[in-house]
Image (cartoon, rainbow, N blue to C red):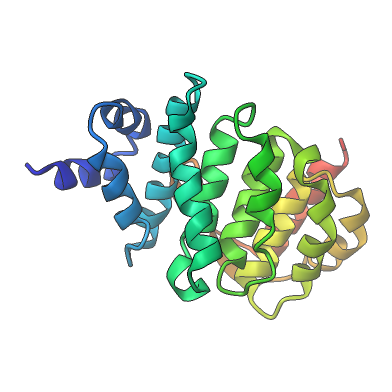
Length: 214
């Protein structure tokens, strides 16, 4: 089995920490994970993003500069390439930041800064959720921009925005979330290694429950 096939198999089995361990000695693992970010298989794409987070988190734990290589590449692609080319980078960057928030806190606002690009918005909103689960204070300034997407015509964006706001402790979003509780717009969110099918309304209700304790 080639290394690329091995990486794919490990992604399919959700063995993210194994990939992080292998990547310590085989730098090509990162290259293959970056290529799988562009997979037309949505689940494989998301798992590649999560795996890059695991790899960068492991590298960042030794306090060396090597842990910054992956987020640097992702940020470069977001800043230097078009949205059509860089579309998978936001969720990978969010996975990196949330994987070891104590190492990458300075990157959290950068991960949210691409929210106005419609091609990148879904990944940015997912990143907002994951980062806010660890340190909501790092991205509190982005709450107004996330709230704007509650009015999107795209159910995927409305749902991801609603989901993010609960973790962001955005108490000011309660009235807008209340209006979405009956929204039957369907979408899938990536959570714990799987694509979970849900609705905008269910995510709005979930975030409202979270905000009761905010």
